[in-house]
Amino acid sequence: MSSTGDNHNEKLFRTLFGILVAVFLLVIVLTFRDYGVGWDERVHSVYGELVVKYFTSGFKDTRCNGFLDLQLYGPLFDSLCSLIYKNFDVPKYETRHLCTALIAVLTLFGVFRLGRTYFGTAAGFFTTLILLMLPRFYGHGFINSKDIPYACAFVWSMIAIFRLLKHNKPAWKDFALCGLTIGLTLAVRAGGVLLVAYLAAGIVFRALTCGPGKQRWPGIGCTVAGGLLMVGISWIVMIAFWPWMHDNPFANPVKAFQAMTDFHYTYPVLFEGTLQSSDNLPWYYLPKTLTLTTPPAIIALFIVGLGIAACSIFTGFRTSQTMYYCMVLLWFFFPILYIIVNKPNIYDGIRHFIFILPAMALMCGVAAATCYNVLAEKLQRPLLALAFMIAVVLMPARDLLLLHPYQMTYFNFGAGGVGGAWQNYETDYWTTSYREAAGRLNRRAIAEPGEEMVVVLAANFYSRVCAEYYLAPNVTVYPRFTGKEPLPPEFDYYVSTTRYKLHERFPDLPVVHTIGRQGAIFCVIKDGKKQKPE
Image (tube, rainbow, N blue to C red; front, side, top):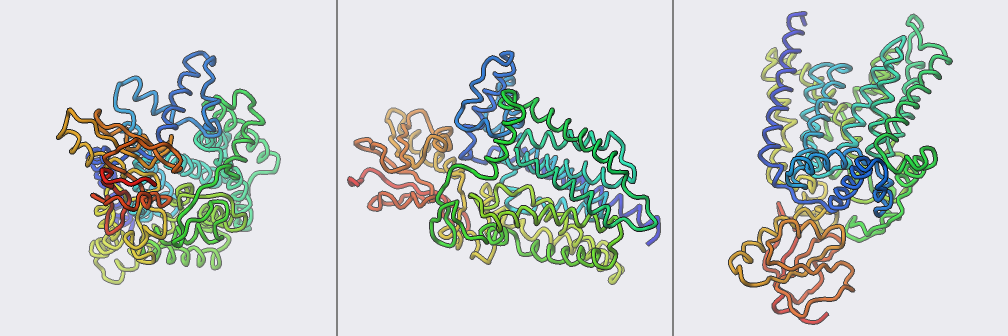
């Protein structure tokens, strides 16, 4: 293809990326209020407020370091959200959702830059579109204030790492940039230390793939010095935003990382139709869940992308392209292999592994760009080839629309769709459907403004806010989670998530409404006026 054609394609895909981001921003503005409060949002919002008070009190108010176990979590994003809704007097949870969605947009910019710089502009555009078509990324992109910011920071840290590895003679500023981005990642979640291992592996890949005629990586002394600079900057940045680290900047980071790899609470997890303990799940829990929650078209592109990467590695090993493929494959597969081998305590499907989805999208983006180039050459009609590939990538869009605002509950045909999966796997595990249930109850409560409505809610200290935040003033809530909490003498409704099979309580009460999508049930409302003693 001519230079003119290359420039045309460059402009075309950059324009398409701009249109994609603009459309997504419009969708965010129109829909971010549709998403309910998530299970963990209450405590994380309080934690962020306490962190802000720590700094504004001149480091005297240390309540953030003793609030539940939240001191183990990086507070960067929670505290930034707190600053916004406290200073501008805007709704708390809607603000958090909007900020989370904007962080998802920033992630799109990151994957576009990675794809465009190292695999071509077409790959950059397709990578961005594919990431947006992953239902778990899209759904969590509005409500998950931990894993989406972590994924975003991880992407930008990988950009810094790729930039460092790209240069024959990396400058001090390259090491410093890695330190900054890794430090910000650590300030969101201690698991960001994994990036240091990725950089070390990248240096090894570079040494192995460097051809005999190419300038090799600088000496060991320069590398060690640059690495120490990077570690020092990342450590300082992490500690700067994290009050608990101020108590012991050396021991506490280690404790936080240990907590991430050996989580101390266990939960019942619905998997393959039975409730299983989160610390005793089958070795294939993560890979199977990842497979079942990824659209088939994207799985097919991922397999093609793996084939392209394998061909590059085995046929042209001593190239920089091979190093980039190795880094992306490491990014995606290492966490999965770690889970398979070590079987740590995990739950909520792939929620804690959203940071590997950009790597999957990169492999798919390479595959989509390659297919586009082959089709354009064969058909001699590049626009038709482009339209076809975009149509293939957009296949999950129908499910994203029909599941709204529960895109995170998506399952593919391997599980029978979400309608076949809800009794066998976790779907709305963050009880965001309580928002819709509250809307139903409010319509009845508003019709009788002088009457008190009594609702028994299947919720605990963490999740009761998922309904209470939206309920009318004349609705009184009695949380009941363990089954041991006292009941009111009379109640109007029992509202329950299907998580932990809590909806099966009060079996004699008639169900008056269910909330779900595509045949799945996420929440039930039972008429409590005919309740019988348990």
